[in-house]
Length: 185
Image (cartoon, rainbow, N blue to C red; front, side, top):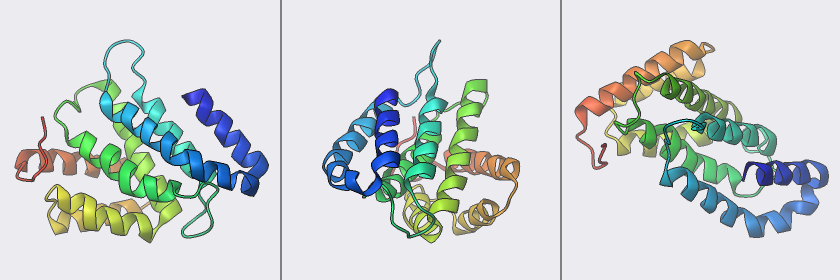
């Protein structure tokens, strides 16, 4: 799948607009397949479990396929998929699962990549990302408004370590309260 994505990325970079029609037809199938693969076993364990490579691929695709803010993207629908699915499913709901163990070194590496992905989404998508994340993602997990506002402030800053630290404490806080409609194992 990684090789296929690299090939698609090269074709888009080479042929840009002429690939538009083809990508509009195949992208939904590619995105749904990737999403199914990632969500079916989001955090494999044992040797060869390189989940942070998955997040890094999405970050690279965001950087390559999306223009800043509301400009024209190379892959129609990709921005919406990232904002509506990847941002909430991978960067929020998955880390709330108790199997996402912050005491594990590999999990911390993955978490760092997820926080970086949030920063890249904010830098590339601006208000589109943050409005969706603050109005749909965080309220769905019953995040208090003051913590959501603190998240937004940290996201705007330049210190990724501060953002990562805040996000970890936010996730731990949300796990303790588990009073939402989502079930965290």
